[in-house]
Amino acid sequence: MQLKKLGIIAFSLVLTAAVQATVFAHECNPSRRWGTVQGTYPNQKAYIVAQAYNLDSTYTNAFNWSCINWTNKSNGDVEIVQSASNAKVTVTSNYWNSAWGNAYAATSSSVSTSTTPNIIVSATIYVNKSNTSSWSDEDKEYNFNHEFGHCLGSNETNDGTRSVLKQGKGSTFGWGNGFQWPQDHDRADMSAYYY
Image (tube, rainbow, N blue to C red; front, side, top):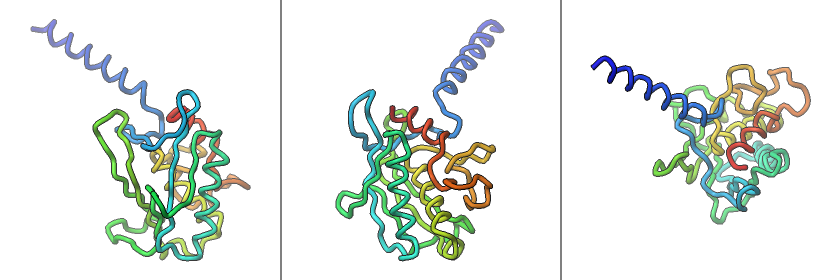
């Protein structure tokens, strides 16, 4: 009986180590990926069609730049295009659920759990205007880049890593110019997720 118990414990530890080895440091758990991918291995990329819907005009420029930045600064692993037709990510600033509290933004995703990693089918990004309307375009852009990072499968990075997934107002981090763009860590995650 004692030997059987030790065997089960050893198997559990090996299984845990094997599962943990496939999870990246700032990946959602359980892991998930954006569901629309273009290209074939090893030259594929996440492809998002996004639409601004009821987005306050003071956020439009930041939203546009966020789409451009993920496309141009992700080493070819992500492309975000804007279109009202077939959009799978909707961005709005005209709704805020009080249950979300004082967050700067929130992302709600529809996720298929029939595969591993789970597949993100669609998402809505909600911007909290009451907390962010006076922000600079760069901080608003950081906010959108952060939320798109969630759409792509990454989780918060509050461990000191320089990443657009760090929670907060980007200009307060002391990173200097370019704080609002996907960082080296983000690019490495996208390369690992989507190769």
